[in-house]
Amino acid sequence: MTRSLTILGATGSVGSQALDLVARNPGRWSVEALTANSDVDGLARAAIACGARFAAIADASAHAALRDALAGTDVETGAGPEAICEAARRPGDIVLTAIVGAAGLAPTLAAVERGATLAIANKETLVCAGPVVTAAAAASGARLLPVDSEHNAIFQVFDHDQPDRVAKIILTCSGGPFRTFSRNDMAAVTVAQACKHPVWSMGAKISVDSATLMNKGLELIEAHHLFPVGVDRLDVIVHPQSVVHSMVEYVDGSVLAQLGTPDMRIPIAYAMAWPERIATPATRLDLASVGKLEFEAPDLQRFPCLQLAWDALRAGGSAPCILNAANEVAVAAFIAGQVGFLDIDAIVSATLARIASGPVGSLAEVVAIDAEARAGAQAEVTRRAA
Ligand code: NAD
Ligand code: MG
Image (cartoon, rainbow, N blue to C red):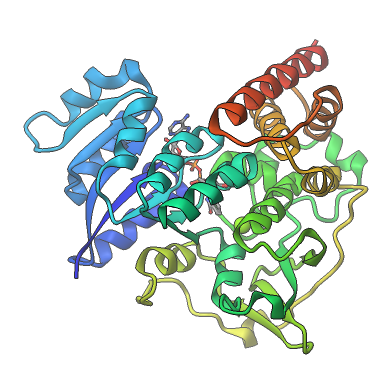
């Protein structure tokens, strides 16, 4: 049976890999809606190629250009942040959330509130508003299927019926491009070096997060919301080959893992086709040619972002939201050449120290804290850039 699919963030790394799977599987999905931030041409091209019914661009000033690009087609158009939420509210069976950053929050909630099945790639939304999203999902019956490779791996080996049998969830971490660098070495790294991930090819923001290990910190918080076994049962291990995508240890000492080549189309296809499994063009895992799988403990001194995320997770309340907002501002400033690589953890740390954290229970509260943290982090960027 054909299922309808909406992709939020269709022009990005995850979104375009999802569209590649749609093109390879005619009849499996019909595309309800696609969205993008400002890439009119990419959005229009994708909408025409997959026969989407609706295309929305977040940049309101780009509406006329989008209309022009889609003139003569049946694709309806929308623009502005509200149009992205409208895309999420339209009746797609599955909504893939592949927007980067907290910008994904409102549309994700819109899809959750109507009880859709969500294939979640947009981890920042779970980090800044995990309790709000999971409570809304419990109320509406929305299903949350993780796309992030680690969480997808855990989902595949997790005993969903008897979670009390889980002793530990172990997230694997590639270590990023600076795994062996000293802090001194890191002081001089460029944006291009930070974005050149040793195994995965991804969008710029998550690539920088992988270099600071903030990505693993965000993923710890994401795991906490998707698999609520308790903070003390979460762990991280560095595994440079990125073949073991994560592990679940059971009370009897058994450890179950999901393995595969590092190709995001595997977890994207798993979430989009669930509960079925479909073929993907991903290269098959050949362990004999991989030869060696290595593991090491993460170094929290050289990678303080991971420590900051651990602390924010334990503090709870608004701390993860502050962490995420400050990180988004710091990473954007690094990419723009305003601050150095080592300023990222310093900006996040200073913002967390400066803003008192408290409980969060609603979208409005999350939005307010996110804005306050962004302003605080921006002030820190300005101070450091001067
Ligand atoms: P990307 O930068 O390549 O693409 C982001 C998409 O979001 C684009 O379509 C862009 O137009 C859209 N977007 C950006 N800002 C927006 C805004 N303000 N409003 C509306 N739309 C906006 O990012 P990506 O690498 O595809 O990552 C997307 C999400 O998936 C992130 O949360 C990332 O952490 C997560 N993720 C990505 C990968 C990967 O391999 N790329 C792996 C795991 C998780
Ligand atoms: Mg991941």
